[in-house]
Length: 65
Image (cartoon, rainbow, N blue to C red; front, top):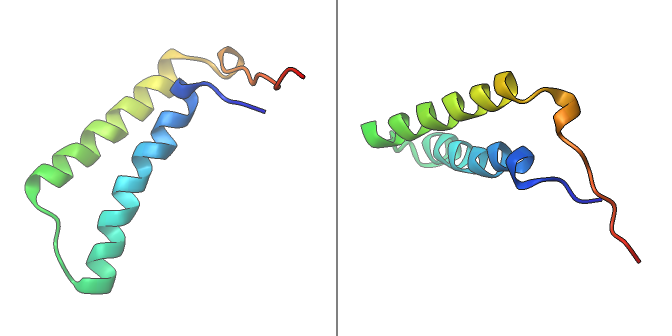
């Protein structure tokens, strides 16, 4: 099954947040202020997507044979 890009994009962008957290725990490197600003943009975008688009708007498409 395939999902829409709009549905998957928060998960894809979440990888950036995970990588910054992992970098902090593994190497002790604190992210820069711009990184935190990016995190905020990702969070706001995800929240807006959840609020503006109801669950029934997200449809999965099965692969046609």
